[in-house]
Image 1 (cartoon, rainbow, N blue to C red):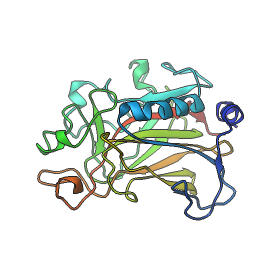
Image 2: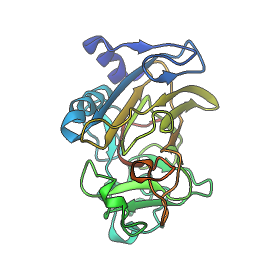
Image 3: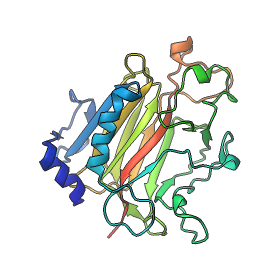
Amino acid sequence: MNKNFYGCIVAFSITLFSCSKESDSGNSTTDPSVKSIVVIASGDSAAIVSKINEFRLLAGNPLNTAPGATNGRREVNWDGVPAAFTNNNSYPFDFFGSADPALGNGRKRGLILNANGSQFRVDSSRFEQIDPSYPTQFEAFSKSRLFVNTSSPVTEVSFKVPGGSEAAYVQGFGLIFSDVDDATSTTVQFYNGDKSLGLFKAPVRSGNGSFSFLGVGFPEEKVTRIKITSGNGVLAAGVKDISNGGSKDLVVMDDFIYDEPRKLQ
């Protein structure tokens, strides 16, 4: 068990959700024995930052910036992505999961995006080059880049040992969404191998803010794969969000937060 998650359960008495059907917490799990710690928030940046910090502490300190750690956490905010991979669909699936010794430690965070025919885009213009209406809709939490799958609402994530090629697991993962309008279409599903650990819904944005945060920890499980569903539509020229008279809930992503990936045994 990751002692970071265990320690935070003791320190904060965070509720453990264990259920086999929809619950008031907005999550459902396929196995009633699976325990989960859910941290959610919505609103502007000031409204959600305390919950994000709560999940950071849950995931563990320190924030690791080099391979070789055994505890602590990793974060990806997309702002270190260079111009060559920004504002186009050429973002490499393993950009933050490289094992190349010639690359810097910033590229070695153990995060792998699974292809499945997908094209990923890191964007510094709030996707204005795709459709000029998007900058009024999407907001970056950590300025100024955002992230999206431009071919599907679904993004799948797996993990490697940072700096290495060995398959790894985490025990918690959280992320920030921008512009969640529909209460059912933005979800995160966690897996240990083929076993589903639960499907969790992101909260709808609230007040004047456009952000929704969802973080889930599993004190007794290994998370090897994550399926993120960001809304129910794909960004494209002329495609409008339901808040702008369209028929789709268009949602993009910002920061990812997860505990240190560990080698699968």
